[in-house]
Image 1 (tube, rainbow, N blue to C red):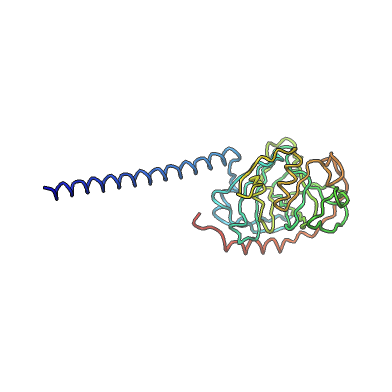
Image 2 (cartoon, rainbow, N blue to C red):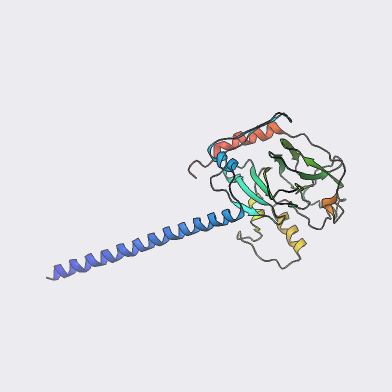
Length: 289
């Protein structure tokens, strides 16, 4: 009888432990599903995937524009890209990131409501391309004259002269290139259109881009309230990731920086380099995503 009672206690103890383990597993599954649902809900709140977004998951889209002579094969797009609403009121959908392009580049579709766009800024170590694939009026700003790339420690309006900028409307099927260390920014001036789609930003390399838009400014990878004036917060947080932004206009010598007109020094588009980056980055596409 003692053996029977012992076996009975052992049996029920084992069942209790098994049930406890089952409850933990179910709880973890529910937490994971809840997290995924929250991320999906946040993404759906920011933007609706376009037909192009969905098609780009299945295949590498080839853009060809006879009017400009441009042909470019895009990378495959991520199935569940992160999206950020920026201080400039545009939404950036991170179609590929440094983590899944072998560290070569990052590409985003910028969804642009009227008058959306970033303030004057530059990248110490990153080249950037702007690619317009749909009919729109997006004005790009850059230096009027050839300029030496800004070096680490040089800030226009502080220890070097402000940069005199002009502006140009980017046409459908055009790629414009801004080398590292060059002031640039843009603004959507398309009339009568709720959102401009198909406007791509490509950064090479892409390290720090997502972290900048996640507002990370703390050593533990979090965002902390710096309790500073907005212009100072923006400047310090963006400079942390190697891309100082200036909402005061000091970089370009005027507060009314979106009103700047005049010629723009146009750099070669380096299209072959961009295509090589897209092709090489496919080796790191997450096929099991």
